[in-house]
Image 1 (tube, helix red, strand yellow):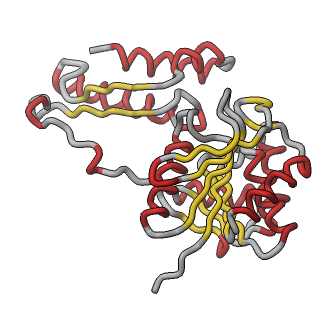
Image 2 (cartoon, rainbow, N blue to C red; image 1 turned 135 degrees about the vertical axis):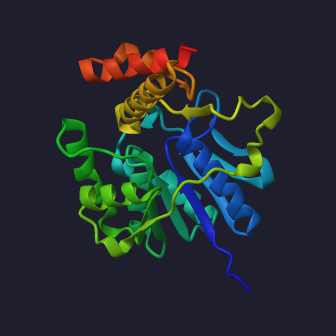
Length: 275
């Protein structure tokens, strides 16, 4: 028989917050529950959500009374969260602590506490690409080197993410695996009857308009493809119709301070409204 594990998924980012990391953790938790594992999620308080909430399929979520500091991250305090984490790990008899996202202070603290308590395996999944030269990335990479030095296994959600994580945290490549993100095709069934005529291809990009999400590459290739189609057929949208949907498009555009980034955002917004 397959061994059943007791797993704690830890991250600052979880429902009711919406985003890719949140959906990833939710889907992972539900899949592990279906396989028979015992799974809990540990995050910080969100509004009036504090304490323990029981969700779909009996998933228990611990909303720890730790206030958000910046961008929904709990205030980094190292050992302040140890008593809370210890209580959860002992109560749930946790065997594996799985931290998510490099920018989540709670995940780093949970993995550190797991090693302090002893006998608990730690796994870390990184969901984003970060640079090496800007101030924020330099500091974050130093945190990763410290936090992941004792991690039993690390995961990147793509081959590029894996390579990026190995370099940023100075990890042994043998300890880092690539488990690519995937789309559950059964949840997305398009109505073929509403599809445009054969010469036209509709491309939908669902993303924040952020440079680290590669939106500049999307805008660049859309320009090339659309220009080539226009040159061949005399119509800008004859072969390619592109729609960009962004949860924070206007906020990202307004906050941008660099001409290149602003230009990319402006171009993407133009593509999203042009027809």
